Length: 323
Ligand code: PBG
Image (cartoon, rainbow, N blue to C red; front, top):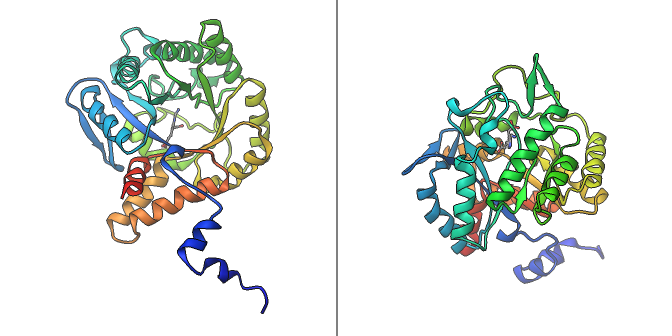
């Protein structure tokens, strides 16, 4: 036997030298759920150890993340039902608490990078990402609403907007609106290949944002499709996306890998709520080791080709790295 692959694994020093994939806190973006009010830190039942935060409680939490080297956050608003309407007008209202949180966080912690979600569902009385007319999710009339939302977030100081609605043409529409308002430095991370997945359950619990009727299959992609992601990627790049996202991550590692080969912009992946909930549940039962499984998951997403990863594990991973 001349070739013995185990020689390159014989001790920790050699293993470290030949390690192909690196994962650090700099690759992670931490999702945070926000709620209006004060003194709120309410746990999300289906996503243990994740909370809806009011701004006052969130400030020290962000500070503790920064101490761990975790400096990128994606923010999602839990909006009261009475503020929701068909046109998601609260999403760009001047007294919107989400926009206020963005302003305050950027003022308090200028070094952090904040990313938003641009979609109607948290603000829509229909619970859909686009405008509903006669039971249909209509595409083009949704675009100006998304553009207003993105410009309002840019005004508040957001660094990256994340259109997550899968309407056609939204990246270009938002890019034009941002540029026309003087925000050519605000980046767009496009949810390029976002699948109609069953793994978003805990997220919809967190925001109480599940569709009131129907499902999201007329805009989110069919989990059976791979080549279609190339078309979405091509369009998003042509329309000016700075980064392309694949979502969910774990069942879609092949899509991440393919887009990394195909695209010439960075690729990110969203390790979504249901993927993390599985690990929390199994580890609470003593069936899996939490730290080892979550690290392996994040590493596999990087290995598949993701430059950045949005994950509820971000803070725990950062803590683990500090140890
Ligand atoms: C909605 C949105 C969803 C998520 C992020 N943005 C849910 C959906 O499409 O219904 C899911 C994220 C997660 O499950 O962690 N615009």
